[in-house]
Length: 336
Image (tube, rainbow, N blue to C red; front, side, top):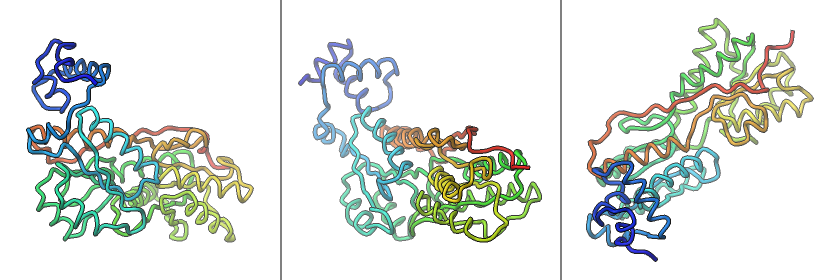
C-alpha cells in the first residue's frame, strides 16, 4: 500500500498539502484537491484516521442518525453523505433507530454521548427537549436533512411550495375533485414534512376556489402498502370518487396507481396521480412527479459540516433544495 510520500511525489506537492486535500481542509485549490484524490485512489493510499485524529484532536467520524434504512429517501441521502465523507477521508457512524419509535434512548443518551463523532447529521427527525439538551452539551455541529426543525438548520425542499405545485398541475389539467394521500408517520419523526405538504395542497385548492373533502384526505404513511389500502378503501365506498390524487410521496402515488388497477380503473383515464420525489421506480410506472434529489441534499449537508470542522464560518441559515415538475403518463385531463 502506498504512503503519503508517494502521493506527494506523484502530484508534485508537499505531504502537508496532500494531508489537507484528503481531509477536506481549506487553502487547497480545487484542481490540486482533485489531483491528490485521483493519485491517492490510483496508488491505493488510505489515510490513517488514528494518526490524523491524534494530530487534530478529532475522531474523523461523523454521526448520522436515520429513522430506518428501509426507505428510498433515507438510503439516497446516506449515499450522498457517504460520497462527501469518503472524499474527505472521514468515516460515517450510522445510528439506526430501527423504524417505528425506534431506540432513541440508546442513540441520544448513550451512543452519541460517548463522543465518538465530530459532528451530527440527522434525517427526517425532530427532537425532544431532552435530546436537544444532549446535543447542545456535545457542542458538535449539527444539521438536519428532510424538513425544517425549530432551532436547527436544515437542508430540504420547500414542502408547501412543492405540494402546491403538484396540486396546481392537476387543477390546470381541469381536475376539481382531488384527493390527498398524506404521510402521517411514526412518532418522533419530523411532522413538518407531511403537514407542510398537506397545507400546500389545501392552499392550492383554496386558491382555485375548490373544496377539500375531509373523507378524501387519506393516511398513506409514506408507504406503498398503506397508501394502496387507504385508496382501495375510498374506492370501495359508493361515489362520488376523485378524478385525481396528489400523493405526498412517489411510493404513496404508486400505491394509488395499484389501487386504481385493483378496481379496474385506468390511470390516467379514470384517475390521474402525481407524487413527490422522482423515486427510482417513478419512470417505470410512468408517474408524474415533483423531482427532488436526496443524494444532493445529503452531500450538501455533509459538506456544510465538513467545512465547519475545517474552520469555516458556521452556516446559520437553512438550505432550500431545488425541485422540478416531471410530467409523465399518470396525469391527464379528466374524462368528459
